[in-house]
Image 1 (cartoon, protein in one colour):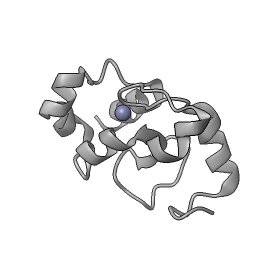
Image 2 (cartoon, rainbow, N blue to C red):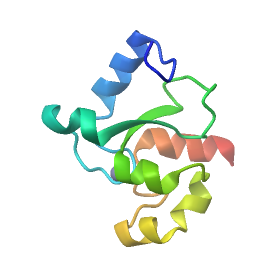
Image 3 (tube, rainbow, N blue to C red):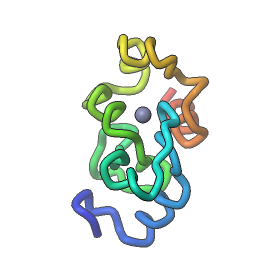
Image 4 (cartoon, rainbow, N blue to C red):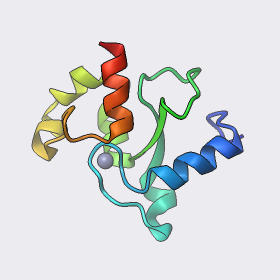
Length: 101
Ligand SMILES: [Zn+2]
């Protein structure tokens, strides 16, 4: 388990799936992985530990999103500037948006 209580096998699955930020698509390479990639709970619920709620995103997206919910965050200047919205995010995030509608 890492510090987010994510079991190792799930952690490996997610690392292998999310090769770039799920929001802005900036790529994590092996060198930058540790400094760039951060664990993100899409619904901000740290107890919701599943491969559909835990994703990797870059430090700047994570810092900007904070505890905002996605629809609110998409209206934020950061997302507007980077053109991040429900149509540009990865399928995992889209699925989460659809299921919370
Ligand atoms: Zn990002």
